[in-house]
Every structure is written in C-alpha cells, then in structure tokens.
Image (cartoon, rainbow, N blue to C red; front, side, top):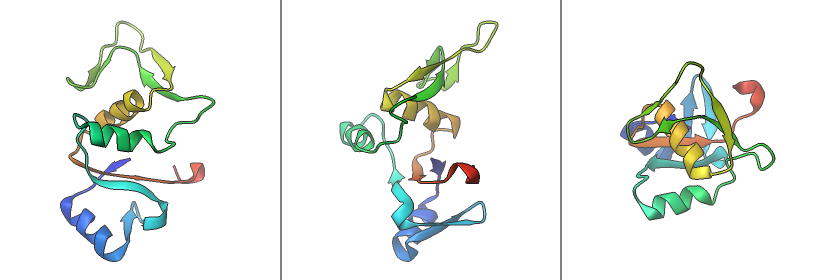
Length: 113
C-alpha cells in the first residue's frame, strides 16, 4: 500500500501502469487504487474481499494502536501481536503511510521489498 495523488490515479486510468520507486507496476498487479474512506461500509467490505493477509501467520501490529489518533502507545518496551483481522491490519498500515486519501495496493515480490 502506498499513497498516490489524483494525478497518479488519472494516469493509471489512462496508461494502466504506474512507476513506483523506479519500478513499473502494471494494472494486472494492482488490487485497487483511488480514494479510501474507512468510515464507509462499502469501502470496508471491498477491502475484505482481497486476500491481503497471510492466512497462516496473519499480520503484525503494535499493541495499544489507535487509528483515530494515529499512534501506538508504548509503555517501556514496544509490543506487537499477530492479527487476522484484515481491517485492523489495514488501518495500521494505512496509518503508517500517513492516512492518505488516495492509495494504491499492489502485488510485489519479497525480493523487491
């Protein structure tokens, strides 16, 4: 997941690809892109239909994470835990990139991370 601009979104509609950090991402490798509103049931249900989490291990988030305020409270030692809740994990990652209005979610290989 990465933030995109309105111009990026228009270019994706037009050219069906985008350059991210010098790498071309084709539309076939894109799960979704555009405006996101996590208060909208439609957007939440749309996110749920993608298999974005590893079904064996889930995703990791910080304990005491607060999406609305945009922070994780650390009391001494930072603690994390695995979650299989796609929306909780999505909110955590959305917050990590600054809660942008527009995002892109695309497939990438581990060696490209």
